[in-house]
Length: 328
Ligand code: SF4
Ligand code: SF4
Image (cartoon, rainbow, N blue to C red; front, side, top):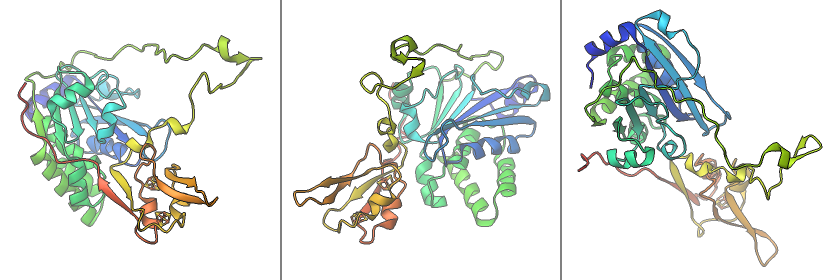
């Protein structure tokens, strides 16, 4: 692990690239902004929202250097030295380590350990820091907003800015109790980050950008599906529709339905944004609630709030952290 002094030397003639993976609404962009605001030198950050929607995967990028000439590009960060993952469910959905330099750092909000993460991302040549940021966020902030907490993990493994500078940046952005709670959460995160150091640092002079590659998703070419110059979608050929999107992986809670308490009022069905309330027609010819579709439920909790008889409750998906040193 490089010290703050060694990183200052690196930053004189190099750029340190960071990439944040989050979900819409989790504050990944704010985290990247705070990096630049807390950094003593020059920095730029850019967001990439994709299909902008609460819960959908987002990315944001940061370039930091003491040399202002080196941070003038605005393209996405394809060759990060640090990758921060704010939501554990993204590990299996996105190639979060794409282009990450050997000896770079993957900081993840998770309760998994080094070996489990290596298995998911398929890399053993990177350093890993883990932090149960969801638990800290719920305990300290009262909401599952992990963006500032993950910055504590970055300070722990790569101190490119100090907790004091980050605290100042947070106090400029947030006020009073909110700022104080965020700073307390970051300090807790620095203490609790599990560090899996492979004893190698990234080479900041090497561009590890992965060349763009054509991805063949198994779809037919336009000549097979094109009719009179117009694309049409044949569901036998191309599976499509939001029904295929596993929005159930976006949320931090399992929602639990209590059939005994439920009065079948259907208020949850009206309010659910993801059609995750299952209702079926009964022998009486009427529609009745049958449960919650966990594949699509993104745990927005609208149903929990609207239910007049408390027939819906929630259970945190993320279990206790596993920070024990792996045996191999
Ligand atoms: S928490 Fe309730 S309202 Fe929200 S997606 Fe899940 S079932 Fe629908
Ligand atoms: S809002 Fe509550 S009582 Fe009404 S159908 Fe949904 S779970 Fe049942």
